[in-house]
Amino acid sequence: MGQGAFVSENSLHSAIHALQSTSAYHQCLLLVHPSIRRLEQAADEVHTRYGWLRLCIGLELSTALLTVPPPQRPWVARQWFETRMRELAPGPLLCSEIDLLFEPTLDLDPLWLLRHCSRTTALVVVWAGSYQDGVLAYAVPGHAHYRIWRQPSVTVTVLE
Image (cartoon, rainbow, N blue to C red):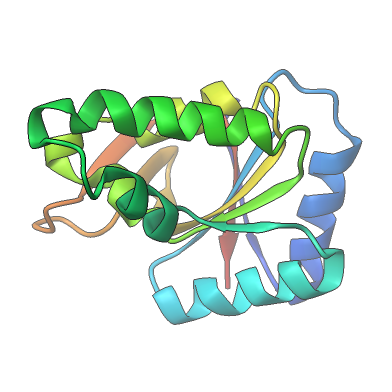
């Protein structure tokens, strides 16, 4: 279920190795930190070291939604995400810039989407937020994208 650990640069690679060597039903690793800059550093390091495809979700999803009428965007966003993950299976896939998944008008559950898609595509996701006492948060209280999940059923690694 939801596991969390504070890790250094070297331990980041241990968390990735553990993801690769597991046969868990959901192969999803969240790299969590409140700083976008720190997350970008981690994503760059993972991309460089492992050579995995990096999917900038915000850029691709916003392009896909550009001509879609607002009432249809929630459905199109979910379909786009699921289709894109299947296209890139089996992974591992490095997902960054996930903030558009939290846009309230899209009415998505980003964690559910990530878990759902990680059954077929192993995912490493940079997540701007926090994880403490079994509570995973995205963004900070008061932000339009702020969300929390108690005891998330994914592996969570909190970056130092």
